[in-house]
Length: 344
Image (cartoon, rainbow, N blue to C red):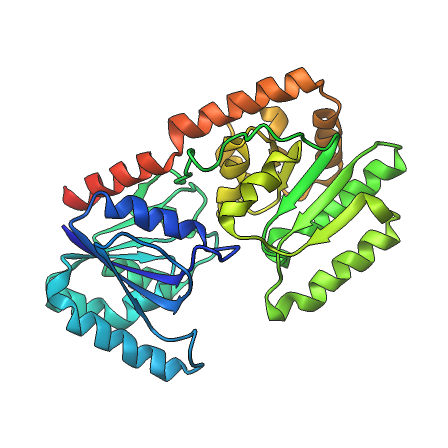
């Protein structure tokens, strides 16, 4: 099968979307050829069987130009792909669903988010199947939805044997209200008032619209008296997050259950303990790693308990968490499942 993939960025150095580079590499092993259309092209080194076509955001800011280039690419390349895989952005299906139906191209959409709308429903009508990882995703309601592994490259994300900072907490995400870093700050403030020892590192960049929110986090950190306990860092390329996970003991994730953030499983794959407010994790991992959404009291209690574990227990539990990823959510498993579902 020859596959057309449509995604937002082709850039292995992007802090948020860099992971998709490894996805494309994995897919390239399983498909005859791949045509990749991206909104913005950055640094990549795909196999020769992957052709990258950009809509031009790295050169010009013009939505009309992007739309023109999109139609131009999908028409010119129509004989070079048999099926279409759209990653997250339903807008492309709304623009080209009828075109692909006319040319008998099967369309598959990957969309994993708690929010959706009537436009999501319309895009779904054009899809052969829809893929997601979360039972709480907006797209989980469709009969044509297939649940997939998260897709973690366990060869990249592993315990490098680095020395972890004692009693260290990590928050790694885009700095935005939807990721709820402010909830973690409140929990840490409570822990400090109780005399609990810790350090915390926040890694991630805000979008321009969230810059003020990001600055308010730093201000709030000072108001809570966290001082030198809390540090804020810019986002790093996905391939470099391995060392970030590997130097921290506990990674906290507060995203909604509808997202099922891959950072949860990247941390687990690195042997880092996690604490997440994600209901998908129940019955998959020990309940000590899960807390109720936005429950500051429970978050502070469970985080303190994890930090209090002995080094031996932290290492043992970290290995158990990695095994969960290997058995259920590896990138190799995702590649196999996608091929199976697209060729049935």
